[in-house]
Amino acid sequence: MYTTDQYESMIAETISLISDGGTAINAYIARPLGEGPFPAVVLIHHIPGWDEWNREATRRFAQHGYIAICPNLYFRYGHGTPEDVAAQVRADGGVADAVVMGDVQAATNYVNNLPNSTGKTAVFGTCSGGRHVMLAAAQVEGLSAAIDCWGGRVIMANDDLNEKMPIAPISLTADVTCPILGLFGNDDQSPPAEQVDIHEAALKTAGKEYEFHRYDGAGHGFMYYHAPMYRQAAAVDGWIKIWDFLESHLG
Image (tube, rainbow, N blue to C red; front, side, top):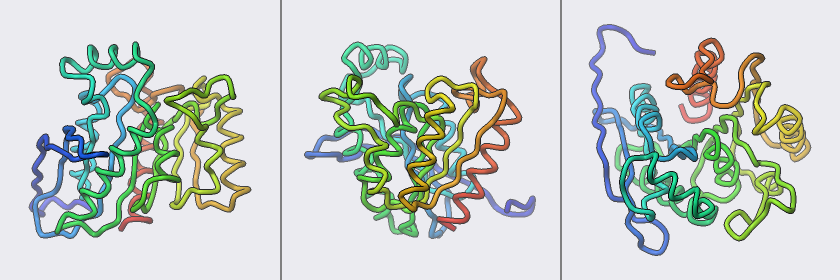
């Protein structure tokens, strides 16, 4: 809990991160200054790319006392504006799930091994990043919690599977190793409410620890303050749910 008499400071910078197979990518990291130790959050950016919203969210987690890191999943496609790079990625059919999981594992290992880390790390993602969160919760080692914000395509028809996305995240529910927080808008079409129902039922059947919160009058991306889809009341409550969840599972 912040009080007005406390000292507050952070450092935020772009670093080089060694990912799968020794590939170097860049990542944005923000962390509180001080001895710590601090828990950590790995952010998985959405389809629009490694953009300003995700860098600001990274600093927001640091402001709340977490080491936060957001790897650039599109690094291998070159550099330019986030919009231009994201367009190249979409034209190529997206980044393979296996590559994303390698980058998330590398970021998790990095923060867990920092000398001022508690070794407790959550993964957070919105949109496509929410889908990747559910893959990470089952496949990435070293995670203590996972936050899926309106992740679409957690449920996938067989016709939607391909070389880059060979498995639907919901099929890995039994392998989930950490508590899940899900935030969803009931007006969303990706995922639609009926798929959120199926997702929740699968977690419950598998005996996984989870909490889902759903908002009437909100659709996809309701926390994106820079877009028409923003819904202030749902966004404010969503962040409260995030802080409570992280406090409960990371400290």
